[in-house]
Image (cartoon, rainbow, N blue to C red):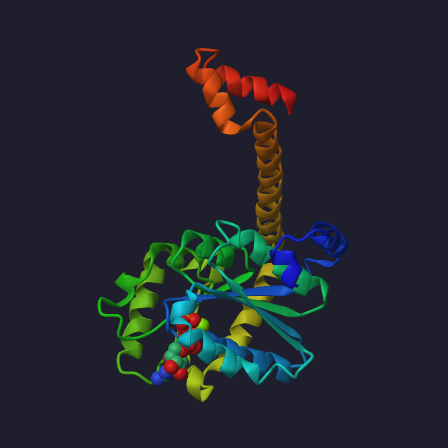
Length: 293
Ligand SMILES: Nc1nc2c(ncn2[C@@H]2O[C@H](COP(=O)(O)OP(=O)(O)OP(=O)(O)O)[C@@H](O)[C@H]2O)c(=O)[nH]1
Ligand SMILES: [Mg+2]
């Protein structure tokens, strides 16, 4: 698995072999502000799914630098209790150093887990970067976790998060104000019509630390998947995911070919020297390279 996100030699072949076996798992995204309780909730979801006899894969996207590793360590320790369970696979992906390859790496890992026969693949992301919102968007079911006490309430929610939510979870419902956040979210959903693909976006409450509301959440995820599978939405989402995979790969391959071509003629500086000598113009030089690809 490590080799795949490092794009080691052989990774492409491995992914090609696995590819026909993908597309079966229910992919669930869990997104929300830092500290909203995503990992605690994930840990509870693993437990609940395992109790239902399902195999669970988890991809946790760590936005943190090694210098603020405390929270991550906490996550690891918490989820570590599942590590002896062969029905659970947990993989962390560091966002650092991936340079835009995050969506690709995540999709690769999801595909591997999917091909390995995990019934549920959960992706935990902090919904701060566009990349991460995109990742959640490629899940079949996106859970957006909100907590009471955000100050300006649901206004503080990133607009992108509202759009992707198939389910809202107000976690830390043991705190005051939870009911108000639920109401605000419901009003917001009502304003925008409240349904997507004919699906009424529910607003659930959980206390992840006490395992409260988790069974209802599992049921709601199941209901959503059932709803998707019963209509055209399932195929549409799979198509959207495949489209992103394809476009990433096609343009990455072309970019690499292009970079090699530029290297082959002495690099960008070599071309620049020609330009500075008055031999041609930028568009003409680009066209010359294109003709050689
Ligand atoms: N009171 C209360 N605390 C909770 C609840 N759920 C989680 N917490 C606590 O909130 C803190 C953050 O929980 P995490 O699960 O690490 O949150 P996270 O969203 O994964 O955080 P990052 O991955 O760092 O963004 C921890 O101290 C949890 O114990 C809850 O329902 N109620
Ligand atoms: Mg976490």
